[in-house]
Image (cartoon, rainbow, N blue to C red; front, side, top):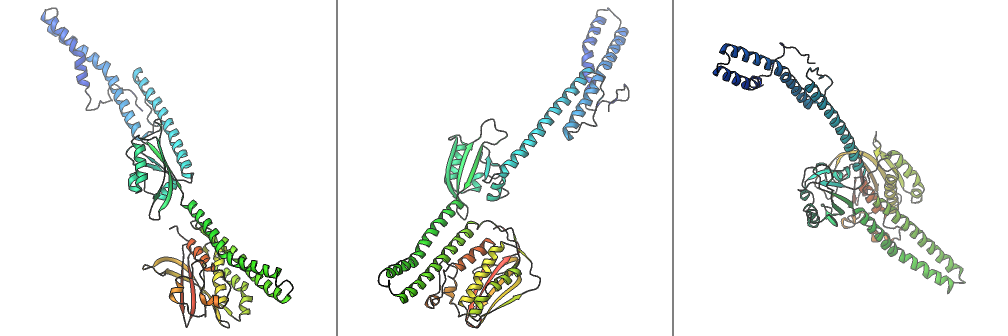
Length: 475
């Protein structure tokens, strides 16, 4: 708070107050010099009068100069912290008061505008971040000024301030961006591939209107076509696989129907035999279609990490109970070995149950009768998956399922998870199966960011081990 006093206030050292007083007094001094020269007054009177004029100028200039200095300090302080609550001035000069009022009004105006712009910016950012497709803004040089959440997730959190040509290597895309930035084209639309996994994107590149704020010159919106193409491929594969695998049982059924309508029309024994085979083929087709649909659904959600919780101990008990009759039919005992304090994991409980059920069912189906099938759960701090040189560290739960069946050769072990692959000896023994169970297991494990290993020896039989992280991470 400034209270005007005549003697206490001090001017700033760098002020040119004395110079201003002398400049204002100079015409008067020149006038008195002329009067003395023409003897119209005495030197003494001239000096006294000049001194009076100087004192008068000081009295007139000093208050305004001092208050202007206070206004300068006030504005400078306002610029530093923007807070005016404790910087109220009491000024005596009307012009100075009006200047301060104008400064305060201007400050309030721009503070209000700033608040509105900040609120609008936050709102715009929130809206952009909520959009599912990546959006990037560029300046005239191709530098990335901003990116929404989807773009930062897809292309990297630190993409801002990078140049667009360092982020993408596709020449057709970079050339299209260049044409827009050079005003050779108002907008460009194209499809290009990017990244090590050759993801396919549709890009719309467009100049921003001249009314747009800041340095932003163009905006690029992306649409990831990879998933759409993947769905199309899955649909195509489903039709191809289903038509191929259903052709044989359908032809068998059609042949038997024709036989039943002709030569075996009045042969009860042949009818019973053929109907039994037709029922088996129908069951096979039903299981095949169910497995194909299950596999397609799993592949569709391959990139979505599970969010639920799964109790592995509970699942193992449920699977063992569900398959107990099948085990009894083959005189096989299901043994369960569970380490103490197995925690719940972040997983899709239904899919984890499908893993354990498929593997246990295979162990019962292909294992030696009067043997054991062992299901074990234990924790693991790291794993060294097959065909990898580096260990993957973290907290895992290992699910191992072992049977005492014949040894599987290394070349067949490598193909077990292929779709429709079945061992020739199993076909020779007429053991029913679709060849999709292990493919389903593999894709579920991949979705959970885990790993599957298989070992087989003549002495210990075949062991499938599934490693599941306590909480799967994206990547």
